Picture 1 (tube, rainbow, N blue to C red):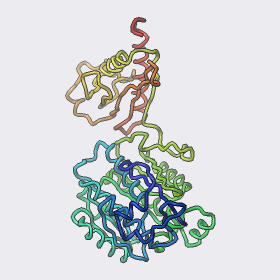
Picture 2: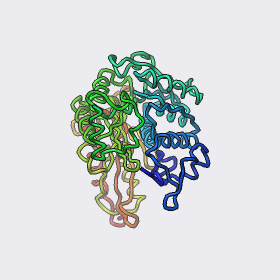
Picture 3: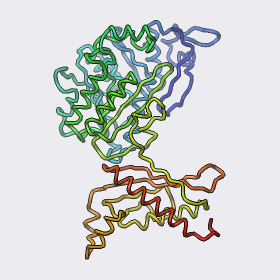
Picture 4: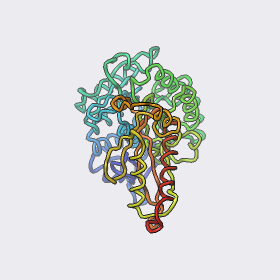
Length: 442
């Protein structure tokens, strides 16, 4: 396979771009002997495993200031889709209120000889520390070499685990650490025959598998079995880790893993879609905590995933009448102020603002209960844990429209029914208030 360019998306850092191999070779001279012109454009021959290794080394050198020793008998990682996975994990962490951005702890299951995820994550995020696990002594040796080579031994530990033990062994080894994420690039295939069959059907890019060892690519039961074990083990550990995740190589596997997640009564999960050239991968993350992710992070728009994505965490409502934005904002703020015991992040008309509830005070049943009380223990309510937190904003319905769209995004909470109840109440009150406006304000 001769390639004159490769599509590279580095998690928003660089944006989509065509990789110019000639420019890359100038930055990393060992790549130069492999670059030739094809139809006037710099090209590489990906049928040569050495070309893949030099390309990986070049991208890591130029874009990440990383060096890598890549043994011939172990997988050569494609950097762009690895970085996309790291970037997606970072988006999850950014949008999780309970993560301390100054001290983030992660686990990479099956770190491989390159320890690529730990190196990328810790090089680009100075507050990350990671443990990379593996069962293979050769991979462990080279992973430690690569960590040392890049001076990251203070933040990256390479741990040997036994295949007969729990996959999530670091959660047992380090009970004092609150882990923030688990990531995994599992063996995708159940047998060598499956690899051959898929290659014959051109179901995957052959350049991605020609350098891998059997233990990196093949496991009994394939990726469904391996990732399924992580899901089942995670149910034992719960919030000891905030987000568990794994890559998946086949869309059919996404269906099976989402089905398993739902069967374990895990209602907080996310799907990511990673596309590089002809190769598509999916990532699934799940949590036992109450941090809710924006739809842009958790719900890809691909039609193939429509039945698999989690329920939306964004409520939208078109306000009943057209009105100037300033009037619509004042209505939204007034409605929020009138919800009993609702804590607002601002006392001015400056959305988006955060609204926090420690109990349901807006439903009819809640209001009746409140009316029966002789006194209200405000102090007690303030000490309650957060039951619901949302981000409220107003958007225009098109550039030239005076119509407003109310957005209520779920940020914290374990009870979806409570969130939906709040959204319904807020929308009804906003419409009622809109209908009371004099025509001169419409």
